[in-house]
Length: 374
Image (cartoon, rainbow, N blue to C red; front, side, top):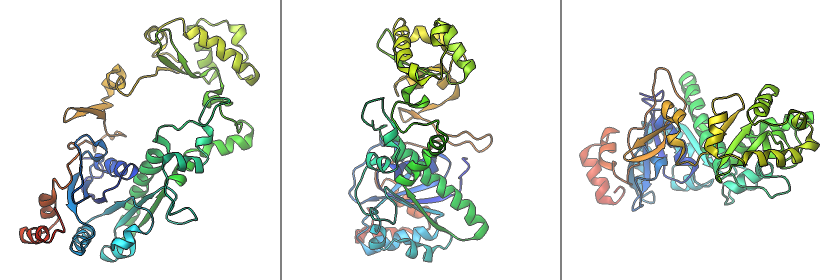
């Protein structure tokens, strides 16, 4: 009974940020029907498809296109992640779909956007966040830019931003009775994630140099440090009162560490404090600093995190079909999101979904015979 319960979503199968967006919508209660390519291989372990249903269709078959358009007539949302122009060539472009269903929210996920000189160029997360100016900021002093896996472009600036845009457009459609296209580009979304840096740079508090700022590993009081057992801890003691707590609990010499905001001292103080943290194991530092105001946490692997007592208490991670994974977020006081099942195999729900969406058994049989669906 999540907050999007009753919202019907058609997802044209893709990879990465598109499925992630639809997963978020499904987590929040939307009925997501994924249109997989006929003959596509799938896996229960493709967690980005959790909570969805799947039907298989040959989108090169005119009968399949007409079937999808009939589904769209009853949908609230369509999501797709092809390069610009592909959906139009298939006969499923926004003009066609909105003519069938004027209230439809048509969500489009691309790297560079629907327009612009690079709109049709191939790319991946690393390219999109590079173009957005975000990759330049990530890395250590004197080192090269370091890709933050694909969290900033694909998932943060891409899928999450598209899900937000869709939610906004759904809310507006309730008032206006009109749908619209949501053009979510990973370059645009990643750039928005870095908004604060522009104001900070103008104010003189952010240097255009990797590893030279408070929160980019430049400062000794905001970084990760290796411990005696080869593991790591994170420190984020920015505010003076938190820095004082760091000095106290780490048993640091107050006079040596007094010039907290003297950037010239940061490299030397970083070496000194790194040596201090190497004197104890990660668990020993946890016993000293966890639950304090140091702004401290152990650096946990994705496979350690589900067992941390705080995450266990919150239910941050769940188990679905024997697979431990992050649960839905954020939390709601009344309309509780849930994962309604594991990832479907392609075409697993073709018959049942079409039946629920208004197709008769005879229509389904004819579509199968024609090769439009599988």
